[in-house]
Length: 306
Image 1 (cartoon, rainbow, N blue to C red):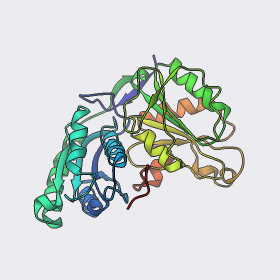
Image 2 (cartoon, rainbow, N blue to C red; image 1 turned 60 degrees about the vertical axis):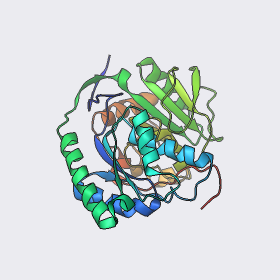
Image 3 (tube, helix red, strand yellow; image 1 turned 90 degrees about the vertical axis):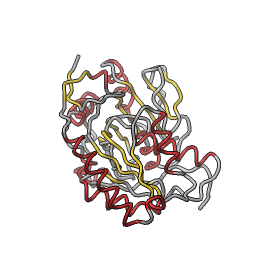
């Protein structure tokens, strides 16, 4: 079996990256979360969500947050809450715990305000970063890899990549738009929802399409892949998100022909070339998505609310 180098985890699969993840449970705590992460050398994200959600949107957003915090690429996590949001920070923490992790929590209202919460969060995040930095990569088997694949176009290499990954013992989490032809993917698969772990089959397919390329990538990232391969539509640029490196595969024409340096894989390269780059990225080589250092995302929504 092929060996890769990964960060060991006491629970779940090993990580391709070793983030301390500072997660704002609501847009109102995003600034404090960013300040905590900057001071501690951690990774924060920014989003416009967490308040004004109702019904199943609360459940889905909480599951997505918990899925990201439970990524194999996250060594430690810290949830930063305001306190009055509808996607309650403590509810997110409870969901992360249910998935076998040990998250930490800081509440702005619990602390008496932003300044006190920021100071407490920095103290906690710095300790978490010290613990995470003590970890070193170890040899691991390719069977420990979960590969995310996001397809927004038809590409013959997609089915070949799925077949190759499964043959090597890896799991695949797949999401595709209506413009992507998946008829060549012969592997049996199970349905998967946002924030869930892959099922018993070698291939899991996202059950409900979030509707946009960026939301599709984020949804797959919440389902525990260590690396994602993206086949964006030829009029769309490659994606970048925090926590999970994305290997971008170029199409032959359109916008992709004008910005070839933004992609890890050129239009003429084969599925075996993509797989080789995936293994390198898993073991620490930066994907071009990571060099863009994007920390913002838009969460898939079921309803139009505030």
